[in-house]
Image (cartoon, rainbow, N blue to C red; front, side, top):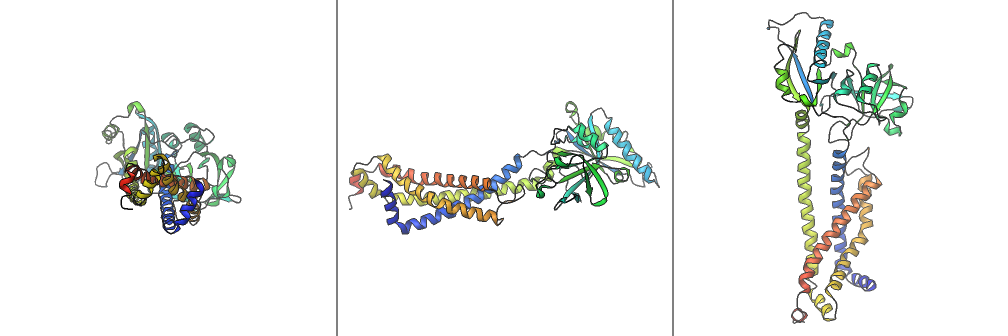
Length: 411
């Protein structure tokens, strides 16, 4: 049967070339769509490296000079003590598990600061996010070390003036930061020498990117003057009406010097608001890709449906010669699947070229990966095979029910 099948395909080479070309284009387009979905799925399923459950951000502002409570001509020391007093009150509040003060540092933060980090020939490339925080920041968002360090241990490292980084800061040089724990790093300039305390799992910038080049260090008194992000983790059993409860204490407990609590926002809301555009883009992409997939399916399905319908007479002759329905269907399916088998290596080659020239999605430090390209190419081939089977099976099943004498009466 195989020899006859090859001979028939060769004899019908004109129509089969166009069909093979169509299968090639469809396979490459499907690969691109699956690669897009693959990358987004992998990124969204990655661990974030932090936990914002039961976490809140408190915003303090200065009272105006028209307020009777306004204190004019404050010194730097006065402003520093204001912030430290507020932090201390938050840390000792009955509903609070941990509290921290930071600058451009909390998760889902659109305002960032950057640093350049290096040691000998190892150095960061591109942007490294700088997080200047008080030690309990590790407890608030429950960061975890790559070697099992707990948030409490990480907090003590910051207290000891050590820095903490994401584990892939020197990824371009194929080095992990766990190899540099306890060693000195230079941050921004050679005068700023820091000892690495630990490396972290993640932390990712947000849910929609795998970017996690980050360095944390303890905020000194000078840096605390610039810090304006108060973040807290509430005890799980106390996480009820937190915003209302804290705002009710704004004029009493949280009015220190010229500072007054003006807003409390959960990180659940911050996460949703900051990432709304990302979610909108994902849904738009999913709808667009789904519509494209539907059109591809209908086009390919229609091609094989029409091709099978055109061969009703051939099916009738085969039935008259004693062929069973399964043998006829298997022969028709084999033609389409054999053409798919022939073009798949060519499609895979084009997929590799597209990935090599960075015409697909960025993921895990690059655009090309043999496993990634192969998985998506296999998925594309499987989808095309299903379309071929559907496009052949249904019209073939209908054609097999036609009486041979009726089908051949015009011959």
